[in-house]
Image 1 (cartoon, rainbow, N blue to C red):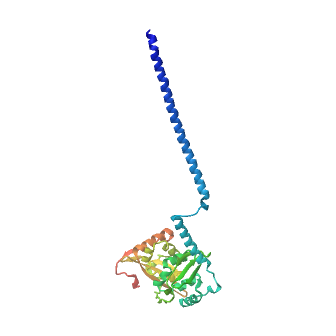
Image 2: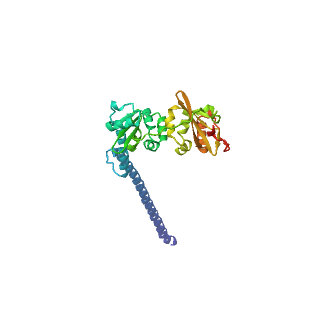
Image 3: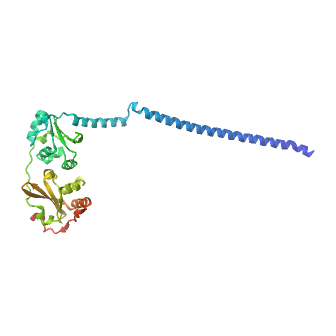
Length: 315
């Protein structure tokens, strides 16, 4: 009797277990289906993004270019192209290639023809006739020297406008290296002549064993900052006048009151001249360090301190 009464209870428990398993399996199926759906959606989304990216990439050249960045880039490109076009497309007539020796002659040609073409040596002659306060507006002496040493500079095209001049510094392929727009007043000024000290570097004890070539000097000098250059050479326009005629450069052995002398030996055909600049000791040390780094064979020592009573310019 008791066993028969227990049977329904056992059956009921078994039934509950079956429903529980079914319920759990159902939740598992739903979870699995949901997970599969999410994964499928992610893969589909990635595929769509990749597909759209490829479509945009392929159609990019054909779509309109709009927006701030496109506009800025377009303006920069147009300006660059315009400058190159101005420099390249101005016709070069035979009468532009002239032997111009002074500002007066240049001014007369520009008045009648508006445009003239000069080689670097012709431009150097003209530049040296312009007062420093005005020639700086054409090109700074440091930029002039760097341009000259680059060996790319082949032509200078000068054009006259109503209120100013245009200077285009070009390479052999007429590509623009630099351009400036000084006032017309640079054509109507004649500079004063400069005087030089006459002697030679090798005859001066202070420079003996402390000289180096023009090429070595400019190689190191061009790499210094403009601030240091001005502390070495307080009148850089002189370098432009002397550049082709410099034979040697020397740095004095001693420093007095934080001043060092930089000497330039200038070839004047039948004789040699030397001119000296008072330079900052710190700037001279920068130059010496750079020279020793570039040309270890020089082995230049830094200047020694000297008392005030020993003045170089008393020689």
